[in-house]
Amino acid sequence: LSGKVGHTREPLVVPDLSLEPNFQAFWGNAERHGSLAAVPISSQEKLLGVLSVTRAENDPISDTHLKLLCAIADNAALAIRNAQLFERMRELSTHDELTGLANRRLLRTHLDREIDRARRFHKAFALLVLDIDHFKYLNDRHGHPCGDAALREAAVLLASQLRKVDSVARVGGEEFMVLLP
Image 1: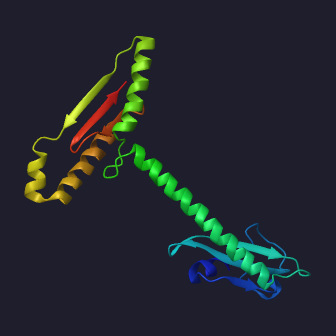
Image 2: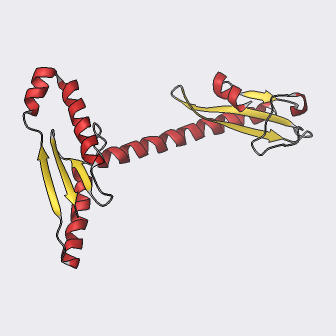
Image 3: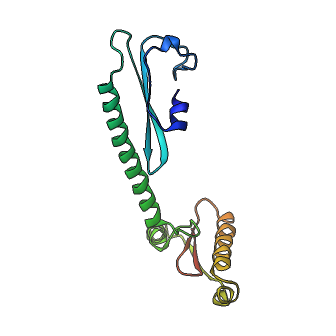
């Protein structure tokens, strides 16, 4: 029933679950008594979930209950969407959108920590600065989509060669830094 609501994006009320052959409770073999309401939780035409509730036979789901559930689903959709947007903004504040690598800000945090560690334990570390030669020529000659693809490929190549303790970041247009403790 929740799948049907997810597909149609319309609220559903089943007044008597004993007459509904498609009812499958989340918790296994539940008794088929009472009523059920299922309401889509959606934002901007995107389904985020389905809110389903059941009520006892002697207190079935009413129109008032359904309106309340729809209001709860709307509030849940806002809360979920806000949490998703917050997480996306947090990700963009520390990672490069094109390559998915750390950005300059996150690398600086890792570098500060590594400098402190090196001083404390009298250990060395390496910081590599990499720049793709003739990158402007690639963009001018073949276009920015080609340049973006090259940057993404460089990011994948760099990241695939790291140890768990290493960090790589895109710090400029075609510039990368690799921190090697």
